[in-house]
Every structure is written in structure tokens, then in C-alpha cells.
Length: 389
Image (cartoon, rainbow, N blue to C red; front, side, top):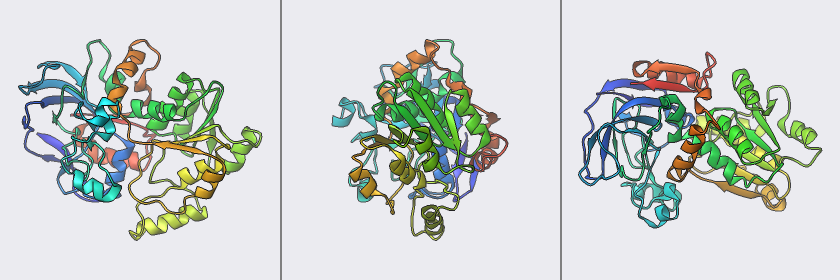
């Protein structure tokens, strides 16, 4: 089959690779009908995530048609149309039983590597390094899906691929980010970043009762999309974010803050951002955390900072004094997607949201290498790419 493979920093190629096969009775194979490039994929593309190997297949936002079914699978059959969540979970361990599927104790065969870096291992993920399982990703013509009775959700309505595809990651992640905030009716929610996850978080914040949503970015088309989602916006090219937020909240600060940027934040010359850029350039650091630091500094006293943005390793220059003395609550994590699949699908079916609004580019898989560069460099108005294998 054809698949997009990682070969090093800024080097991805569509290669001929062996077709996937059933390796466990709980597996299914799907023929991928749509798959997307995620902002998290750029952390691989830019070389920030360790334990990648040349030839690894990327991608963790796929959907498609079941074409082969393992003997132990009972929920799916050939021909079923499914969306596959990026988290791989067994469904029966301590964490899965609690609905904390991204903490699955079973699905990562390389848990020992993750434990060395994190203390404990999270769940295995599709297409996201050998530290997180070494699983082939979904930017390919076919995909093996382990624990198929637990992960994929069947799509039995006439909704288009693009309407349901983002159940695989960015819609649940944006909703989870907003939910972690503990939004109370009328709260002001500030969101750093206006990429795809942030766009879903904006809409989710409204669903959860926010009274005001403020989105922060500098890319015009992203800011316009945020405004289309009824958010007020701050262009950090044109205003100092802290000062503007204080003006907008009468000096109190936002009640809830969401860092939807993660480990590759830009800071446009602020001292911490300059230090981050220098240290990551010479491999003395793994993360540029300007957005997170700024969210902590801006959040009101006894407010909440939610962190769905991906971080890789140790973050320095963190304003813990501010977080402690202001009494902030910090909540974060990889999204336990399985918990959200059914309720969020029901929202789409009811017409409460159509996640396809975020798609700006639709391309064949063969053009994926160019699409990665366009997406990374924010060229051609690119916000979200859907690939058709």
C-alpha cells in the first residue's frame, strides 16, 4: 500500500510499504477513506518527539471501511464505516474502566520506554513514536486497529466523512480542553492559539456555558475563523496579550485559560521565547512554552488553566510562583477520546455543530509531503488538511 512515512526532521515521503495484517484476534483492518494532518503531527515533522524511526507511518486522525475482522471482534463486521480515535485502549484495565482511556495500562507495548521519561506510561497512540507503541499511523491506504471492540465508533447515518472525521481527535480534544476548565455560566474563557483544536475549544466553551470567549493568535485566517465562532480576538502581533486581557476583563483576568498551542509556541521577541528558541535550536530543550507561561500569568486568581497542547519533555522558566500564589488549578492530559465519541457524535447528528467548518485543504495522499510544509508554515490560508488515500 501507499503510506506517508517519516524519514527525519522535515522529511516525510509517500512510500510503498507492506499492507497491514491481523496480528491479534481483537484487530480489524480498515480501508482509509479520509485522514487528516494534526497540529501534533508537526511536532514529529519538526523533530521534537524522540524515538521516531525512519519509515514510521504517520497519522492519527483516520476513518474508513472495515475490510478484515479478527476472530475475537464482536462489535464490527466487514463493510462497517468507522471513525478511529487516536488513543489505543484495551477497555478493561483500571484506567479504561474509569473512562480514562488515554492512561490505558495495556495498549503500549513499549511502556518501559515511556516510564523512563514520564514515570508511568500513557496509552499507545497511532503514528506517534516508538515510546508510545510504535503503531503504524493512519495516513495510509489501510490501517490495523487493535482492540477494535473498544476504539472505533460506527457511523450509521448519512453524515459525510468530513462531518465525523474529527471525532478521531480534534473535536473531542477541544471539548475535553473546555471541560477541564470547569466552566461556570458566564465565565470568560481565553484560548491561546486559533488552530484546529482551539477552533473546536471555542465552540465547546459556548456549549458548556461560557459568557465570553477570547481567542489569541496572529494568523489572519485563523483569527477570522475564531470570530466566525463568535469569539473576540487578540492579534499578538498588534497588542501585548497580558495588557489587552487585563483591559478586556477590568483587571481581573480571564476565569479560564486554555493553552491550545503546546510545545512550539512563538513569542515574538519576549525574553522567555527567545531563550526557548535558542535552547531548542541547539537541542538543550524540547519545548517552547511561551503560551503556557503567558496563560498562567494572565489567568485570574483561583482560575483554571487547561492544557490540551502537546508537551514533550521538561519545561523550564515556568512561573510556578504565580500559579501557587494566585491559587490556580492546572488541568491537562491526552484526551480519553473513547469517553466522548458517542455524546459528541450525537451533537453532530443533532446539528449542534458541523466540525467540517475547519477544513481548508482537501488533497490526495500523494500530496501529503507538500501539505505538511504548507500547514507547518501557515501558507495558502491552511488551517486543516484532509487527505484522501
